Length: 282
Image (tube, rainbow, N blue to C red; front, side):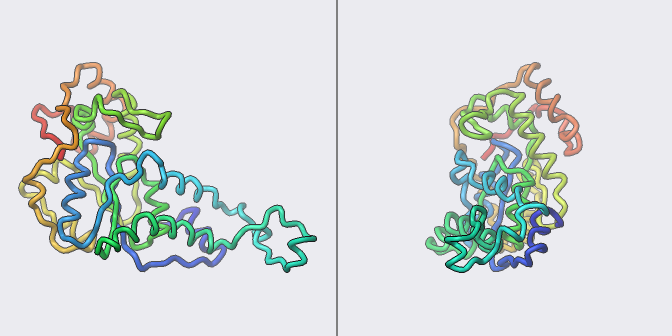
């Protein structure tokens, strides 16, 4: 997967650690079955999959944005001089950087400290996380840090997802980008879904919520993709709603607004509009 990060590696001959294979479950927004799939992934006892950890803090997007500054023209070799003690006092050190490998390792160290080490302390050999705000550029950053990572991209009918999410206190980015309207929700769904559909590597698979809850769905494709034992289908039979609010019936205005942002992508995924019969998201 050639991008600015792999070119940064090549320019400075950097090495990535490949001893970890976290599982990243990225959902196109809220109320799309991500918690159900998270429970399925945890069912083998091999991986602890964190649930939207510190989501409002935007930790992973902030690291993604930081990594996007690494371009062919910056930083330059001049930033990595190794001055002697005398040069530190009498030389020009206004732009003296730690070496590129240290920067690369620091991304991994922060994520390991926050996610991997607490999972290991609980006895899990692997870890992962599910999120509803991250898009493919965040996944590209994560695949740079963890080359063996596995990704699951989850989508749901956007009309039905909004029906379930409408009225909840949601934020794309806290505190100044709330998701309060069908327009906000539809644009968020479309941005994430479009990015998922453009994922260029077999490290990721796309799953529709509607397929996941069908009795004949092959959970083996997910366990094989993630390198896990057979998933226990038990969670599919137990609905656990994280919110008490029932789904809202969408009026014609909300239905049309969602269509403006989502209809073309939704049709590609087999969605024609709100379903007559809605199943509550786990």
